[in-house]
Length: 165
Image (cartoon, rainbow, N blue to C red; front, top):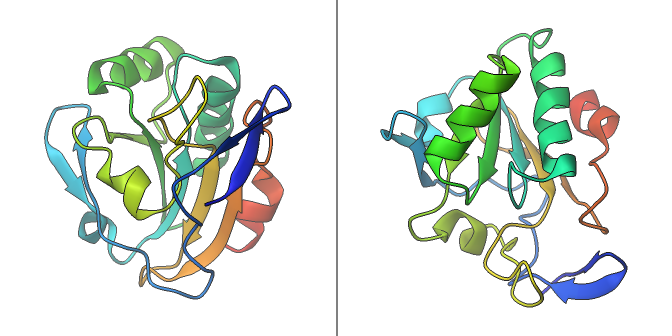
């Protein structure tokens, strides 16, 4: 279990992030067209997993905008923005913002992605949502970088995440 904060108050996750150097666990999430996406769909590409509680918060929206901006310059790299929001909310946000360089995936059905990656919040007002995390994978699904943001209201370290690419 990891300890993070929300407004300076301690909250916890259901586990620890996967270790750098390990293989990423496969997942099954919902795309904005309601189709299914798995990790295998992105094989052969570098992948940035931008994970957050909800697209409808300022910091989460800022991270999606920032990764959208950075993604356009990344060769052979896909940025997956992952939350438990409904796919409709994710699609609405990116459509309204004109964001086309990121791929939104929803873990709303079972929350299995958050549970399997050890980043589901287990207590406090955001219990059941994902903590703010960035995980970077190489073309073979090996984890190159993993950051769980200590204060959930803070943005991730974009430079550190992108430096491993």
